[in-house]
Length: 474
Image 1: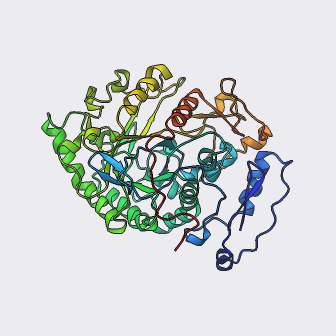
Image 2: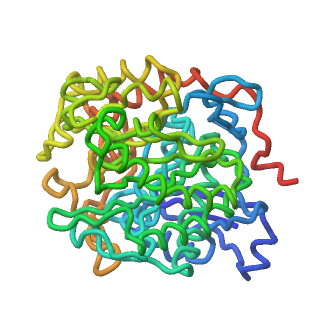
Image 3: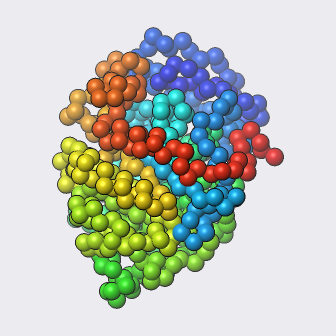
């Protein structure tokens, strides 16, 4: 089948005739849209490709003539090391993207849809070298609720099984496939967080457990045989939080035991359906308490632990990520015991939120020094997007004041900001780097992360070929 790319004006060919027969699809030649604005291309693209989203069937995965990434064999945990089948240590460094359904729904305002975003970051043509892409799957998007900044988190369960299966087929499957084609690992992240200024709900709510179980019962078997896929059990358990070293404070240790009692069944659900998939586990207090592993580790094999940190946290202002830190915001050296995945970190040089605001020299440079000192620390920068903050990109086609103006993805119009600006592929160029991203321009934060990835691109990569490639479906 033929998928038309509205950004480049080119096509991507999918080779499965079986897919065409199953879905009664007759491919048509791509329209000649080179002279159209990007907004017009996006509109026609969505109409043309309503029924040709790649499925999860192996024969439906796109074939590509090159592999710009790395081998992606199944990795496993040995002590605090992540290793490939040969026993060589692997360190993964990469990027977060926005929720793929949100990207697809707001492409006319953002400038790129999900596949175009992932291809830009992993396709090899633009100098990016991530070895892993973290894909946040948000219940708010699966169930088509108002964005969290507007209405807060939806009550669980936030989606039905049918909504989830539709989301996977139309939005997540193509992203998982594209990561495999381009030689990068993919973290499927259940991206729940329960907090607003006037309402904080507990991670031990029984209704929430029902939602998480539904998610992993559906998702875990779907990608169980994909060697490049990781699972992240739960993005950020918020309250009650630990905020103290559980080795010193009994109340913090008790909270960790309670968290393990709640989340262990979710881990067990994943293991039942995907016994070999590496699985990442967060912690109370917004995944800032990985030192709970000193109290008691979760049961199971191939488990690692996550850590989230931003420039405005007190521990970041003191650059004490290796220690316990204020309010136990540090890691307490757990990377010497278990693999530590910093699945979110970030900063914004200019931002109205104290949580994100810091200069590159204040936050990013010392953070890199800490992360580079231990090969058991893996990281994914937040966020390779021009809207979700802290952002690595800006949009060339909007004024700075319109930075978050993407409309209502599920309950109202999404503005065609690209079309209004009549943007073309030549739109936008950053003075510092000369980088032209089509509709996006690289921020200072993005330039730092991009250079870091480039400098470490050959360090800690798997040393053996993947167990199964895109072109080998036997």
